[in-house]
Length: 232
Image 1: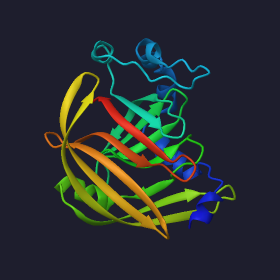
Image 2: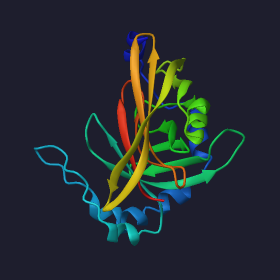
Image 3: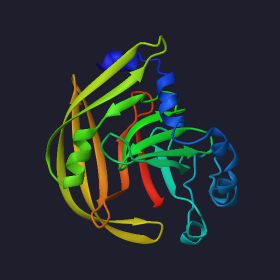
């Protein structure tokens, strides 16, 4: 499996594009960048010879922002990006589907805070089945889970990555997000697939079931991303 994942030349498939773009019109996505210019535009990091600098975000800017804000940081580069929510809906599947858009037009889809798909990252998750993960988190339960991720290679062949996992409850932790402290329940989902091990971390606000912070594997090329919900 590791060798196969390393050889993946992944691109976004037509189905993946349809899944993500169907949740919001392209004209709205393009015209609504005023949000990023007015607020997040002041926060864009200046990257110099010493590498990326962290985004400096304060509560005043967030309070003046009219839309929800999510910060995503790939561990590979450490360069954070701000995303805004462009779609939110309930359908026949578990969890509420949300699509978040970055200023470079990359998109990430979540269900109740669990990443289920991506577009424009360069090696995208076409779709996924994380229903057991969602059930465990919703019930605040530990125990075995299974997840299934679908990728499309450069030759348009579909690759399915199936994982056997276990959800653990690591207890309540204090997490500070832009000058606000939250008591969050830390759940860790440890997964294995043919010799490879991946770990997903979720910090859950039990007062409203929001995942305010997470660390999730986004594919063999993109690696892990940290997501922090700055404003709902």
